[in-house]
Image (tube, rainbow, N blue to C red; front, side):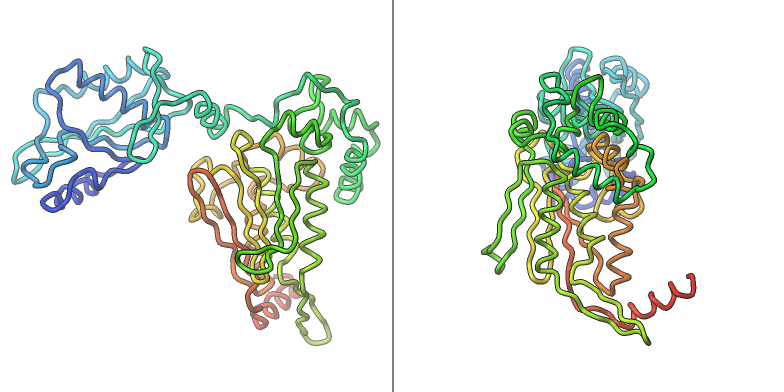
Length: 418
């Protein structure tokens, strides 16, 4: 993320009463000019790698970050060569990082500062010496092995669900779950040519088996519980029916196959899912507290986007007036709660998503969230609410009062082909 000259000047105007460090963020840092060239370039290269491994950002050079008072804080840069700075950063990073540098003259103080704009990287960047850091909050932290793995997943260079398990074979898969998968395929895609194949060939075609071995995605769908727990340690889906805000009266902790878990959870939600009838002329339309299309998509999304390298369950908390669904792992690929309707879907587990698409449980990429919003509105209910942080995503589906006039408007428009 690049910060504009105007944004930086706005921050600098406030330095009489604030310190520059108060404006620092995951994508912005202030640093004092270092006259020693060797130390300067070492610091700049470190920050270029740090920012590139996260979201990119702007390093403001020539401002002391822990000093109040504009004249004391804004010390400026001297004797610099912009091309030399760019070249040193480029040559000392791997993959290469090409920064953009902007000179800004500060009126009233008479010094020049440099805005070093660092792009978001396309992979994991290191110095040519092998050192790698990543921007976490306001700090540059070492990019450890597990963090590198997470970063590769987020960038789409690694998909754990596509990996094969050489310790297992077709014979180790659960035959009951294979039949469940076929039943889903038959119900969702009755004309599919896949139904004419043998079980083994069917599993090969849809990606359950690859190169003769089950994939992680395949194991999650039709594997035995003991094998899932052995090879995918953090897989778990927990359903709670909440008696009130702090107590539950029904709990399901599932570490077995996803298809079986989904059926069990859907059945429990439907048990408590009351129906309201809306009359439109001679027609009666039944609207549930929680429309199936909405909560099914939300639960599937949580499973598809969860981080299987992190401890934690997909949690489904079912209250009288709302369902809260959360999963380990924040949004990836630049998606936020604010732009989620405008962005193409970027599932963390793309291979698993593709297998589910082939059996009809998931439609084409990017349609799931749109379907949720459409279904809620067409049912006269509030839109889903999304919340996210670095380590989780939560969606809240509210029951709420049905807007009957709006439901009638939608149904009448649909009858007119609109």
